[in-house]
Image (cartoon, rainbow, N blue to C red; front, side, top):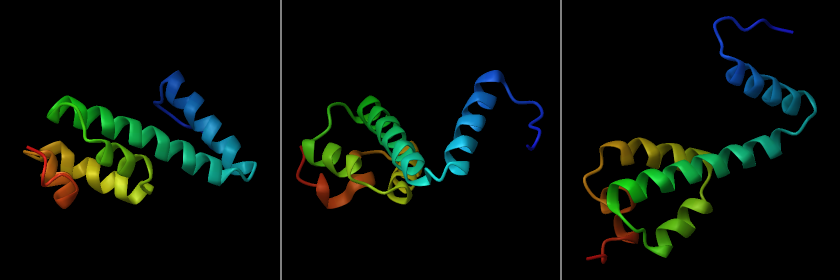
Length: 94
């Protein structure tokens, strides 16, 4: 097993859990879990920055791939409006 230096106990616990999942062939479950966590974080960020979210945005985020979530998160950090992140999906929102 590889040694991890300078990591906190929480980081090591996550690392070992991920390693067990990968070693056990449960990569799909790991990806699904990561997507759910990323979606939750993105929704929290969006709601904090832009207020209550349209149901269409919430639904789209929950159905997104990790790549989409990652891209939206990066854009959302500097976006001025929700439309900057999701375009036409929220263009009619007043």
